[in-house]
Each structure stands twice: as C-alpha cells, then as structure tokens.
Length: 177
Image (cartoon, rainbow, N blue to C red; front, side, top):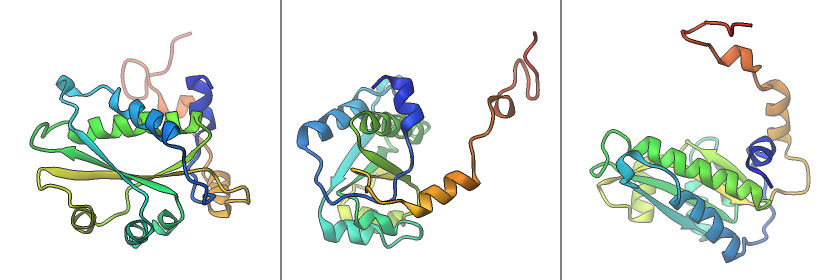
C-alpha cells in the first residue's frame, strides 16, 4: 500500500477481532515509530506494548476508552520530558502517527486515545517519573461486523474541504489563480 493510500484508508477503529497480531507485523509497526523524526534527533519516546487482558481492562476504565479491553494490543506512547522538555509531546505524536500509517498498510485498525488518567497509567505500567504518557493507541484487526459508533461519527462529521483548512501567505489568504 502506498503512503497516500494508507492515509486515505485510515479510520479510527473501535471494534476488533480477538486475533493476535503476528510479531513480524508488530515489529514493522514499531520500526515505523523508531524511524520518525524528532527535535535534535533526541528520540525522547518509549512505547509500551500492552497485551495483558487485565492491564488492557484497567486502561479501558477511562471515559470513551471502553473498547481498549477488546483490542489485542494497546501501545502506550510515552515521552521523556527531561530529555526534551519542549518537544517530547510532538515527537511522540509524530512517531505514533507513523505507527498508525504502518498499521493501516499492514491491514490493522487503530484508534488514537487521549482519554486516560495519567497517574493511573504510570502506576499500572511502572512508567518512570521523567516520562509522560502522551497517548494510547488501540491496535488490532478490525471486526468484520459494523462498528456502529465509528460509522455514525463518519456520517455526522465529514472531512472538511481543503479550502476550509488552508490559507496562503496569511490566515484567510486565498490561492491566487
């Protein structure tokens, strides 16, 4: 799958098959994160791959995160705030987006999750003090049956047109013919 095809195909998936993700597929997804750019090449990220059902259940206790318990994998993206105080969040986000696109190219579904209680996640996964939890990423093979919540969201909130989100030279500036 070409990069632009993966960008077009990517959806937030909240319903997963119980099928495990093969290690070679997971390794390629994680490698995509490793290869991401970062400010001053500090690479302030650390990713925790959570497969344990009880830990996934506890991660799913946050609002809007209940589906995490059925995703075969939840990847917790952490950033070292001491190593890169200004840029760790952006760097981790870039690396996680690389994972999202790589996962899509591998036939996996993902859903970026920002709903979590950081102190609980840090305690559950023994995350060191210098690290902050940036986001969680649910990952697995999309469930074959209809994901009703995802379908409704896509119907109600369509993508904006390019003209609505892009300006030229200044905010609100229109492209010259």
